[in-house]
Length: 88
Image (tube, rainbow, N blue to C red; front, side, top):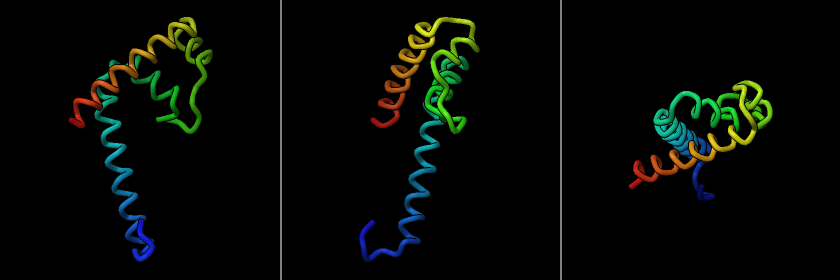
């Protein structure tokens, strides 16, 4: 924000940008299946304050940490592609 702008305007602009970012995030996440979406949200703390560790998610889903890592990697690839499509 420029120094001659009021802080209210800057705060308002930031709030609008944050809403747009959240909407975009929800849009790209909705393209994932529920397991991938849940893992991404858990790993990055999207739906909670603290990100989940690989070992915790592996225990929850009854799979190896490597499997969670593969799911996460594939989901991030899908998210990047979807985001690229939305922004182009």
